[in-house]
Image 1 (tube, one colour):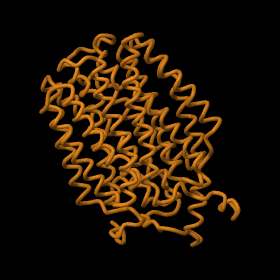
Image 2 (tube, helix red, strand yellow; image 1 turned 135 degrees about the horizontal axis):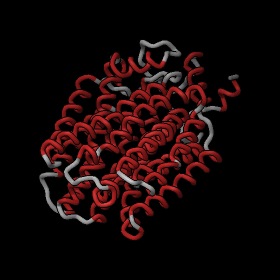
Image 3 (tube, one colour; image 1 turned 90 degrees about the horizontal axis):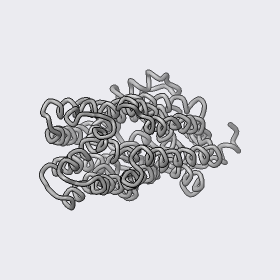
Length: 436
């Protein structure tokens, strides 16, 4: 890549606004696909797919398949995109989504839904990963809280909207037809816009590496984590980010904790609300508020971390989420549960984009996508871990309430881990002068 090419690939949201917007559109579509399941499937699992009311582990099998596949594919996507490019991996993610609505529509048993969620894991692992990586590629270090905040806002606002929309559509057309029509329209539009309007952003990462290597980088200088070669192997990155570097490993475990909580809120929260007497549409409103408050709040929680640092919002988010989860079983009524959903959404918003930004802050450009893939591997494997652990707890006790208390305790401990073991990563923060 020559000097002129490096000059063309300037980082910054304003300089790359058109691509930034198209990447946000892509993650909005990704959020719609996963969000369509959030309200309808857990509630109708028994009526439409024969899942026994007390068989929590069987019900959660579709989350286990999703988490295992998405976690692994996050890491694969990160490594693959450093070889074949971000756009190609994004498009492959949308191709993998095509069977999802068909499997749900023609499902003969709950195992068809488990299989559909395997494809959903591929779609999420490839497509959502690439929207994050691409935004980080084209933005400056001091903008990455804002960039990841906007990215996750678009995705999780879509999760909330899709959960509410499909609840209404399912009442009118039935769950199978509603999900078939909704998902098909979303996937077609997503694939077409990815092919026609999304640009490859790998050259921006190469240009950033060149500026750092040549000493021509201007602006805030990141404090990259040391201990890896410029072009490490997959196993070197995975072991370093997962276990060897104290800050990276603290961020990874926090990712697991937040997805354990999201598993609870994806499957057991709607079941709990429905068992307490709320209608399907009321459940859709409560879970929709959770997704929307998570999504919308990231418009300020991401930029907040660009100003005050990453670690404080992450710790506050884990502890606020823990408080909201515990409050669910302490309050009663539609309004009260809606407030707890909002509290949990804000907690998620404080931690979610800023964990991603923290990893991106200290990962070197040549292996940043692999570092993000490793973090996202652990984070989304948290779906499978959460589904297995929470399913066993609910199964053993014959009710879901103990799973809420267990999740709240896990989140509180996770926040303490980040506080004690992770160092501040923001390049402009005074405390980043010393790294783990």
